Length: 141
Image (cartoon, rainbow, N blue to C red):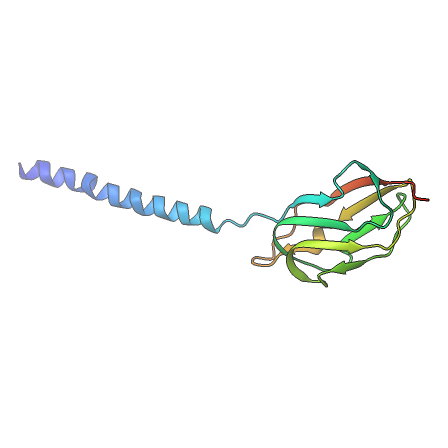
């Protein structure tokens, strides 16, 4: 009987070792930092009839800091349009609004969120790739 008990001792200790490894693995999953992502924009990608006086809103999956030039606005492609951003950069926010003034009428505008200039507030993780979306402005009399 004594030999059987001694033989079972490693098996009895194994569940606690497995439990410790499981806890360690779960903690590793919890501390894994996902990069920030653009979750939505206003106007939406492909929108048409956008009033030329509109602002552009970019929403992120988590609070981010943005350094210049974190956003690019071109109307049409290749023609930069000036704008201000709120909140002021770096921001530390989940939503940013671009205020371009009046955009050209009946023109396709392209917005680029520059990945290398966008990092989450907590870990400093950058977006994995630039995010690009476009919309078309309306004719306004």
